[in-house]
Image (tube, rainbow, N blue to C red; front, top):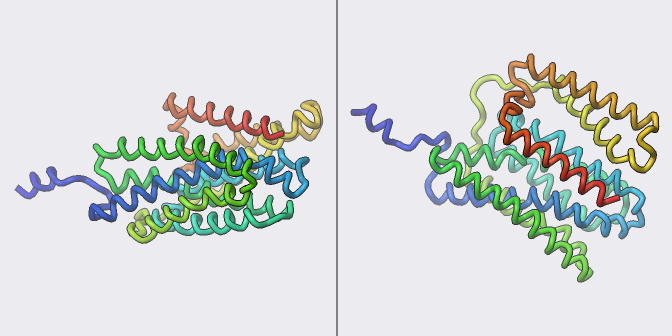
Length: 295
């Protein structure tokens, strides 16, 4: 009888009262709105921001700083969540990201802008995967696809809708308001998740794949820098060729490290999923296109 009752009870990793569960789900949606806004909205605002500090010659470098932080920290964020807890991986990087995003609107010097943009990318990357993981933990299995669909919708609305609104605000002379816009859903998401979700950590020892992280950083730095500066200084330039060679070698090393690691930073089995691989390639091509338009 007890077994029958156990089978009929909903299987949820983190059971929450309905009110708290709804609040956390809304918080996750807000986080993804913010992620999309910091991506596409800031892409729209790159030229006006740099023009305001007379630094239009640094568009490519600014783009690198924007993309590198997210690219490096997104795969690491999942491991950090195991280490510090699913709530804390949202709250701690989320607060840092919001503070940097607000400061970004008022700084009028190139170097601090670059540093803040890099920090926004790092912290955003740390919590990017968290809403998806949380949605899987607080929902019954049958409700997870619906929750994931809402997060995907939030990305579309935040990215495309946010970039349109940011463009309108900039044309109206409200650049600071446009820059501050992504921080609004971010702060709301941090508050809702922080107040309504327990900080659940993975049981057992959590190991961080340090060699994998180093190889990932070197691979991304070499390839992204070469791709962004190749068209301006020449694809045959020794520095560009060296960047590609270093990046590709580091990528090969990364694959070998991840294949042997007990807890890989990037599980290679993901690439057996054709949909995941296609989406990854499309996302990379979109990033290149955005970088090309910013030049």
